[in-house]
Amino acid sequence: MVYMNTASAEEPRWLTDEEQRIWRAYMHATTLLEDHLDRQLQRDAGMPHIYYGLLVQLAEAPRRRLRMTELAMNAKITRSRLSHAIARLEKNGWVRREDCPSDKRGQFAVLTEEGHEVLGRTAPGHVAAVRQALFDRLTAEQQKAFGEAMRVIAEGLQPKDAGADLPWLR
Amino acid sequence: MVYMNTASAEEPRWLTDEEQRIWRAYMHATTLLEDHLDRQLQRDAGMPHIYYGLLVQLAEAPRRRLRMTELAMNAKITRSRLSHAIARLEKNGWVRREDCPSDKRGQFAVLTEEGHEVLGRTAPGHVAAVRQALFDRLTAEQQKAFGEAMRVIAEGLQPKDAGADLPWLR
DNA sequence: AGCCTCTTCTTGAATGTTAAACAAAAGCGC
DNA sequence: GCGCTTTTGTTTAACATTCAAGAAGAGGCT
Image 1 (tube, rainbow over the protein chains, first blue to last red):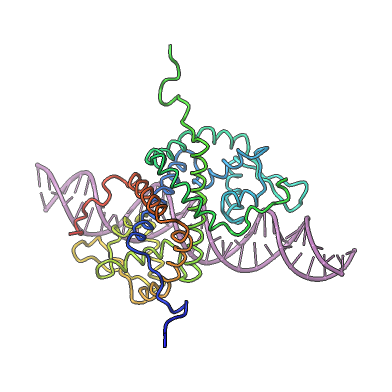
Image 2: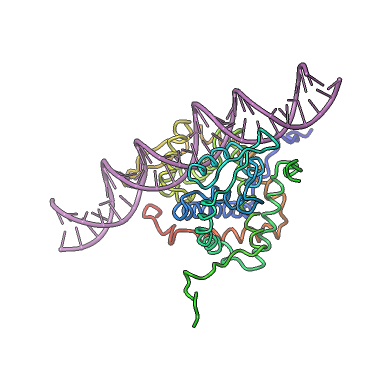
């Protein structure tokens, strides 16, 4: 008779030593980098990295505005977190909310002129920080492999059919 | 005459389109993965990912204990953050503090038996989540390149001579 | 010893995040 | 229209993180 043959009772497939090294390198790199950029932006722009990313998204959107849900999806954060974040950015005068005419529940987050200026002032420093931490250290082949791996991981975690057509996207 | 030739006034080296794609893939992958693991562990182990990582470090250390500073360095977090985290884990009964006999300022964080059991119970699910999100999706070559890139990035951000010999490390 | 500086760790307040619950409107089926 | 479910966005409270400040001991120098 064969015991311990069901999936739930089997010994889990632990990480090999090499997998462990990779996993730890990942944890270290991501923790250190996020921390580094948070500090850089908190110092130079007065906001954490993710808030800065929200402003960037808005700056690139048509009419510098996005629906809350779309912005949350782009940034990969919850609507709740976004609500809080936009409230803070609004208090800073960098974003304002606008009602959506076609959906009375909807809200647009709109980048203000002041917000746009902050972005213009601080973007060079931020790009420099990203370059210094990442692109300046990797060879062209490494960058390619790195990007490919990141795409694969992100796709695997994307909640299913995220990005399915939202009506207000055409 | 040549104008605009000083470093501070030059146009910054913006990211190329391909660099932007890589950078966004990175942001998406790391945000989604950290979120995924946080939820998985919050649900199954009652703590966020980073707290879980602290318990793992302690489990692997001799006598299941580490000095606060060393633990903070291993986990790449500030001592302040660690202080708060250990306070919470202590309240859960998974860690206890112990005075260091040779340095009266020092504290050991010690994994309790209960903490060890939580780890044993929840590690299989966590490893499975990491596998599913990361290792199962990357080829062997991709893993290698990925690991190498992560090591390079982490090394570049490591505050200089971190890991220099602490007296209580032999 | 005394003095100074650095290290270790903690604290408290401000800030940010999460999870669950909720209101309001939209969409769908009848 | 009417009911039911889903979507949108916000709110609250609990929790986590950051930052600046501080207590207490260690280490070095004279």
